[in-house]
Length: 171
Image (cartoon, rainbow, N blue to C red; front, side):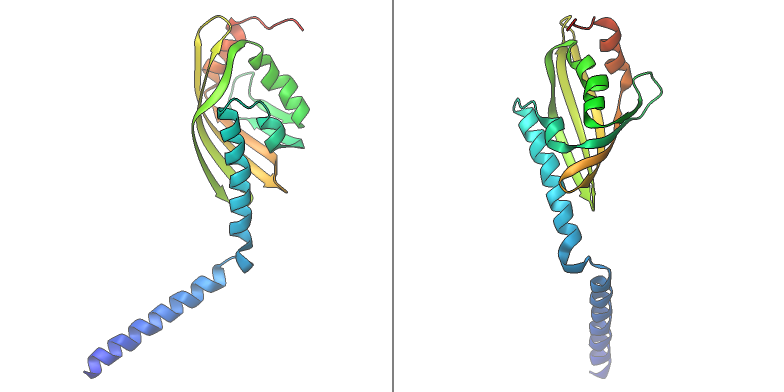
């Protein structure tokens, strides 16, 4: 009986120590989890609107002074300072070559503190009638409900192929 009582006491002590250590590493007042939830919601809802035909994704999610980085080794890779610069130099030149704009078809979103990661599949049709599809991973650094930094990973071969193959529309 005494051995059983000692084991029960040891179990209670282990549980108490685990609980205490968990409490000391938790975010104060759930602040981090609230931030994560809010950041994830901003990005998730913007993707849902985009998938449903919305056209305001970048305005909804990006801060005016965002820094957008496209990773890769092609001429399309690089860093864009500011939302308008990114739209003018990366989004519009590509979008004008499409007859059906890229829409997200599958999206997974994760959040960790002020970072949100969206892994998504997108497809559209180029103006020459050929399908475009790509896989993306975008890492957003959020501040006050807007992305201030984004690092974008995608296969630049099909992206660059559309830019090379389809002439730009004259404005």
